[in-house]
Image (cartoon, rainbow, N blue to C red):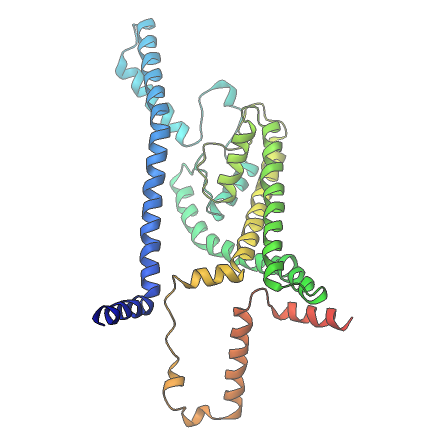
Length: 336
């Protein structure tokens, strides 16, 4: 008897704090995933780093043996200056001296990477004025970019996701959830093909030193806004039509980022994912107007109608793939 009561009390305790338990497991899982990534990256990349260090030491020793008039401190001072310039995107190699990092097209490409928070890091401001302007430009431009992308993605999602799903649901009578899942998968496949595989094949042809895997790696790192900067297109010394190429890459990054956000928005609106996300959210408390007596000034007809309209609007937003414009589209399709 006591065991059954204790077991039932434990079950009630777990159910009462289910969101907190799920959130705790989520945090633990995320930390374990970080540790897992660190272990894998370290075990895979550390041997290559050690080989590169040994190779550089041998080259440095051989160079000093062949040039006895040059001391090691002088060589290290020269190499330090070269590496510092290289970090700013300036190379001393003769085959790279023709490429300027701050012509108009390169500056346009840099501005797009800053505002999209990709930030390859291959080109950075050198002057104090440029650094100060970059701060002010980013403070204003990044929220502006988020507003722009949100507005564009909201409009694209209506025409690409909500209306097709609602059309098949109303016109053909399919289940809305099943149509939404199939549509999300197809949209993901089309996006990956058009913004990953095809551009990777194009980059592997246009960039002399890139294979298909490296090109695909660049596309993923760029469109996910990770922006490591180890691969940047259009930096080769023999790159043809470099200005036009840079403008094309800028357009590709903006369109690809919009496409990625549309796919993410489509998957986030799936009913199954909404239920999964709610497991980790804090439950909303009851509204105070449901507990306390409604005051006299809230009893007017206009206020009641406003509250009812707000409740209906909230219900519409909680339903998957339902939008006021989509409802109008469905009414038109039903009357045909």
